[in-house]
Image (cartoon, rainbow, N blue to C red; front, side):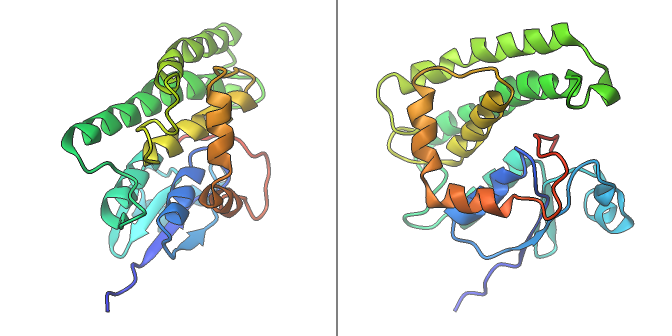
Length: 225
């Protein structure tokens, strides 16, 4: 009988920490949660800094192995713990390449280059730390909408998910960005709404969303990680 994995996930409360929580439930993995949040001082403790010198959340411990960055954690879980009927990465080589392209596109063009720039420079977010810059925020929002045309084109042919009929971790990354954009008032393309609504009905999404709720919420918001 195979030994159950020893998984601990650090981090809750952000648009990035929800990704590995969601993936855990998609893969039906048992895991422990350390419900620490960003900018609370909890990521700067000696214990956590030993595990993650970057002092960011989320962080996954798999036995004696640690990995940070939400997209990397989701990819690691998908590659390591997918099972028949619960595969989050395509098997065929070219499908895998297309999946990888979507993942890189989402975390660079939609997340870090657009939405996180908005967060960094918004007065009601991290502007007090990085500088309030309304023009930068507006341009980042415009860039997001411009880049979203690639998602619009992909969904135009009636595809259920980004990779066709197979739900993958790329859909986890994209849905969190769509949720984030709506929360920031950026807006999303019309055919992304039924896609997003359909994915929100997944039980694993609902479970991951619940697992991501802070024990003592301050201001739920997207965060670097």
